[in-house]
Length: 367
Image 1: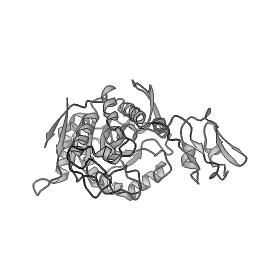
Image 2: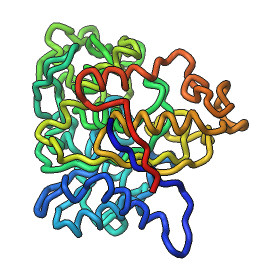
Image 3: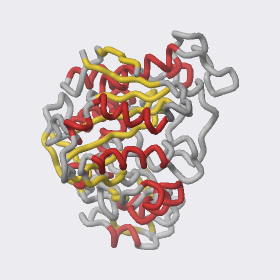
Image 4: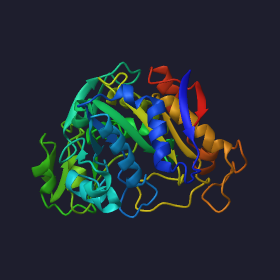
């Protein structure tokens, strides 16, 4: 049984939320996980432009300050997205993060995109998974000495909820790794939208794209799945074929989470913020009204246990009537199926426990 530490959102002149974050980190063992001189990755979602549900940058600053007191050298990190958008490569992603408040002047640490300029700076890692034997993780995650995983706990349209497991598994994967989790086939060109500009063939490092009759065509036999073509297409004519079932995506995601922790046994701590629990991912350029009121913050050294505890806390809460929640409003009701009824969200927890990522059994200690 793992320990999950919890603090509600109450504050007073005696103790504010920043002091609570410090206490949670200390209780979860950050002092033992992080040593003086450690290059310490703070894995966090910078939020898409237009979204406002992501973790507040000033909370990240508190984690940075606590790590500096331990003598560590912290940096904030995220990886490039698989789909075209504001965070499809490092320049746009860093610009978005800074515009959302994560600049050095606020957080006190540099921002580094973990999979490089174009999402292809990756390290292949062997994992003892049931589905995968190797995964592709952003190199800067692997190279970091220690990890603090700061996660906005919310609902998600593909995994039911997004917590520490998703922040590790999907959020630390290179673009190729993300494609592996979402699809089993090569991207596809929309002939209707393709203008035959020739940018994608020149950008493909595997000679998998040719122009024929003025349209781009991808050879699936040559395609290595790096997905660079998706991000360079100026008219968004190249698209992912989202053919992987939700339950299989979650299993792969848990195995990727295992790979992202390579070399970090005893060197990782998790903080989940159960605030502004939106019905969908922070990757959207908007966020809908929260489905429950703010609940609190959890900390642990176990990513499975912390996600299980957060899921239980959300389901124990009363659902907000004026939200996207369709069913499960009563305390004890399934809030995640109330938003996404077809998603078996428990799979990521079950598989994470099965492959040794963590334990679903936990003791909740309230600070």
